[in-house]
Image (cartoon, rainbow, N blue to C red; front, side):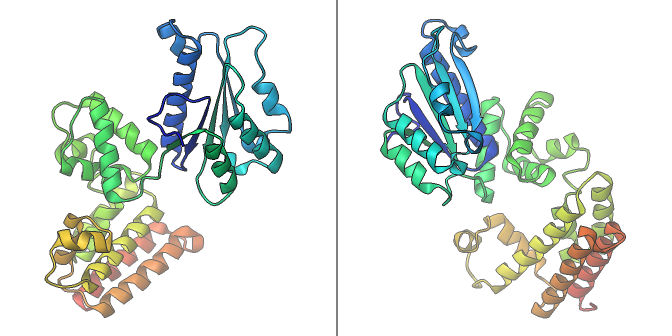
Length: 336
């Protein structure tokens, strides 16, 4: 089975459902193929040379269409065919893709994307078995993986960010990779020196401090005035009410996880067990002071009610969130 490190193959399968990472892998494979079809042309090869590029969705292909796209061109120069979302291909198209992988057409590079799940998994197996090169682009879901993604983005721009800056950027922008990549590019172009928490906060003019997670932190710590201030600022700067209820629920879940974990165990030892970074466990242990299991249960119920309200049941999302924050603080102090 070929891998991303192997020489360019006539057929490449890019596996993953993270849109940005798949797009980047497709762009790199297309550039690689065009350069191979236009050797010795320097930069012109990257501009396409004589190679045609066709992009199609697997679900929209009809029987025989692939054969036409991969047929030799009358004008020479070869071609590159990108087939998106092969997991949606019908039986006839799947069979045609497999046949092309077994017997690639001359001067044609076929690049196929597949989400990698259970849907049409047999096609993926058949393509790899037929000799296609496989490039995996797995989803970035864990906190540590997102931090690694940010480091790599800054490294490509020749810049460096410290841990505090990376965490602040996640709080300010969220977890969407496309948004994070754009933020890294903007920060690299518009700032100088090491990108730290202060740089991120200054660049986003308060958005980092007023994220849903900051609202949640202040609420579970019992700081009502600060939590409400952060909430109003977050709403004023465009933070979605749904994201704020999600952050409140996440903060309470973290307290529950850490509160029920083994005592006397270091954050580093618990990190893998709880699926949380050590700094988050340290923070939760500090925030747990004043909380009881009963208080956490009531706070969870308040957030669940607010979530229903902000998703359309209530007249005012802002009022529903203020009520939830007030209730959370009261539950911590025992007055809820």
